[in-house]
Length: 162
Length: 155
Image (cartoon, rainbow over all chains, first blue to last red; front, side):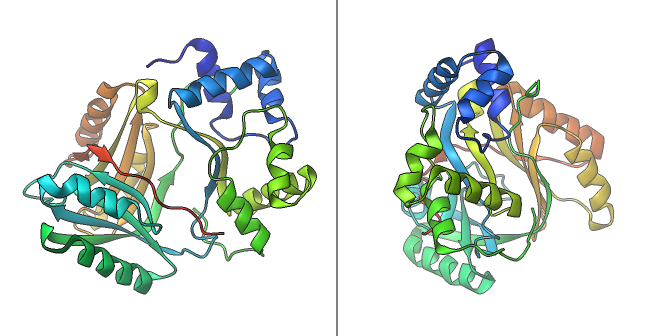
């Protein structure tokens, strides 16, 4: 599903964020030489098509007191992966949960779940809860803590906002 | 990402962040429309969001895009980087604009990054380029299935 040139300009103009002004879509429209109604209609279309997943705030877990997170990884039976992944992904302390291919022999894990907590001890407690939840269908697991953020720019369309 | 101490986030701030993670309306005056639900004026909501953004309690406010729906692709990748060469390799990897984020992690596979490209072929092209430039293998972990995202910041 491709973007037409107008959609592309709107995406480029909004991907860094909306203005904190009473009429943020008007601000986008003025920057692009469109009218506000068209910006709203186009963005509604992008939302309906799933190009825009959601519109809202990205919370900073650290600032909100969820200082610790670990990428937990699990080797679960393929036949059970859909059911187990749905169970893990529905937890409120899991922000992302995906089934991914293993990379044998380096990497035996196929279920990835980003797990959050106030500190590492809480992450470990919750990891044990997930292990209990998965039971015998899980053959092994690990947790990878981020030690440093090397880059965080998010998705950017080339072309810029102007 | 900054790890500043939380700067005076009160209960209302938390409710605002929790309540505005999705569904911000596509109407001419969206802040006014949602402000009432938090019991504040449009001006106060805007002022609080500005402050939360400036303090880093929210890192972005606006539309979140799906690269795949635009014809592009995301792929989680990992590398095992020798510690002595870590900074140099990180700079080589980060120099690619397709690298959306990159984390050092506690594992033999110690560098984990996400590629976001405008075409599916861009993933392999970028991964190949990184392998050529670094002389290290890049393992790719494309998502096969995404499960319901249950995470919500509690109010």
